[in-house]
Image (cartoon, rainbow, N blue to C red; front, top):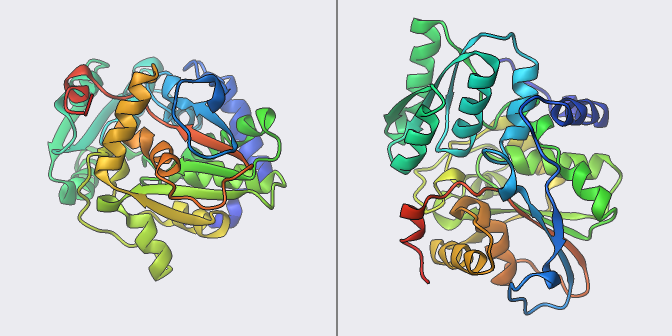
Length: 320
């Protein structure tokens, strides 16, 4: 993969990507952003929080980035990717729509239900140990002449994730924006869109599980690092990535950590309020309700719920 400079992510690039995503035949929706006070969710802080319901997006929030990726690649290609579920689901949906052949390399730890769903779109799935993901992708590229579409470290994907612009239409000057972070593609796209749109004072926080805190560690070491990730939030446990790290380093205030128990509790709390959100998509909410982010009093805050990719079999494992 050729190196892409962080300076390649410009406001013009993000605006162009936004129009591409808006007009995509994949049916990307402008997701609702609702005031927390109009839900039955508990809140102990006196502030104005809006929740961006990306969990309602078709397939997953990743469909935005995928829509931009596929629009910029030849139709009928033969693509391979790696994903724990969310990106793979959107990739498979797009592959079917565009008549492309596709293969998703998944970590063995990902729920079986996600593999079955991805295969239902006619895309091949190969489950391997997490440490082998890139090796298998490279084999597919070299031996089978497939084109690799990265699930988070990709300029087109990050630009497609710039839903920060959509968010600013509802809350033009947020004080704080809280976003889940795995590979960092969503966080990087949201942060770049908000900062490049002129919201210099907005503090943007990424949230990672304690057991899969690659961006947190990368911030400390000032370079992208990897780790053996172990978390209930499988979608937030990918290997390190260069471009998202550099964008986050430039535009993100801080990475905060939540425990698996806090994530599980968040999934259950959201579900009881009628919101189906997977563990990976619940991390930002978990950070807010567990007071992981300081100085929210009387602030305008946006919390992004980023994925609803959870089956009944998984929900049964969460506290009632």
